[in-house]
Amino acid sequence: MARPDPRGKLPLPAGSKESSLTLERGLALLQAVADAESEAPSISELAAAIGASRAAVYRLLVPLQSRGLVRREGSKVRLGLGVLRLASNVLPQLRLAAQPALRTLAEQVGATAHLTVADGTEAQAVAVVEPSWTAYHVAYRVGSRHPVHRGAAGKAIGLSPEGRQWVHSTGELQPGAFGVAAPVRGVPGLRASVGVVALEKLDGDVVGPHVVRAAQEVADALR
Image (tube, rainbow, N blue to C red):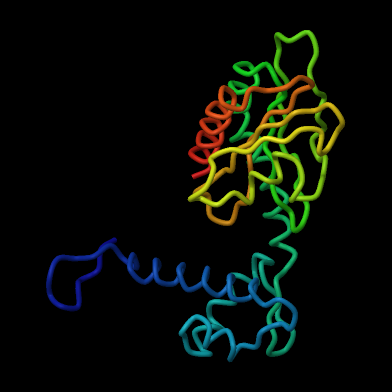
């Protein structure tokens, strides 16, 4: 139902602007709580962080608390377990979004394709697709971890946007294994790469463009 515009002009959808502002402030509040590294922020600190009054912060906390996204300890606010429930659904959705691009990449190159995500100082394989037509290929386990600064998958995550589009490695994670990987760019909050790993030397000039294209397809699927 529309409500009259207070300026006497065309009617506006009821609550549209207010709802948008409330959502934006609520998300800003949740981000401010998440950004606190150690000590839980106070109501006053949160009000200053999002540019709102203390009364507004109290109102915004109500729906966040009801969904378990935050919890209050007196005047302090911490993230709630509801955030963990949301986070538990991230990896399955990443795998689902990445599968088509990884399948195409694996079949084109004839090597095991993977999506790898940075988790602190480690890189974790969260999706793996093996080629269907090769006589043999690398069996790469979902959940495998390695230092983020080693291997093509890890190094690709740290590539500068102004630098190379892909990177290769030889035997850094497993003797005799060759990898080529490219970063997944343009997805806020995600540090990841798409790559392939094989037991025989890969021609980076040939495989690199395929990997870059797959990484872009994954990014497009996640946006």
